[in-house]
Amino acid sequence: MKIIIDQHTIISHHQHISHGNIKLSNILLYEDQEPLISEYGLSTILDPKRFWSFSSTGYTAPEKTLSEQGDVFSFGIIMLELLTGKTVEKSGIELPKWVRSIVSQNHRIPAIYGRSDGEDRGSSKCK
Image (cartoon, rainbow, N blue to C red):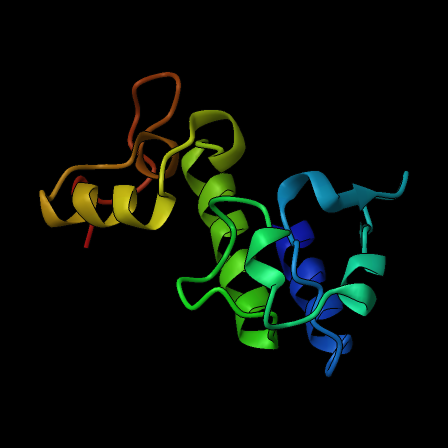
């Protein structure tokens, strides 16, 4: 959880510079577990109008623009990956759609609600 909060702080401190390719593999950790976002160099050379062809599938906002809002969307995907245990790059799923379908069917997401020992951590249903 600390890494998520620290990562959000890093993104918000780089205002007016859109990264454009925020994903789990671009988050590096120092020995003390402080996060660092790598590959900022791409944001300085990409034309925002042609950005979509360079971004990572699954992390790109639906509007496919190089913007701070797009970085927030990508950060949301990372949070979903950490909370659900699913990864966009390996599974190829559209994580927001997957979570939406699970929640709409009133199913539980095991990584959030279940534990490996079979005990529930929270409510028995997604709300």
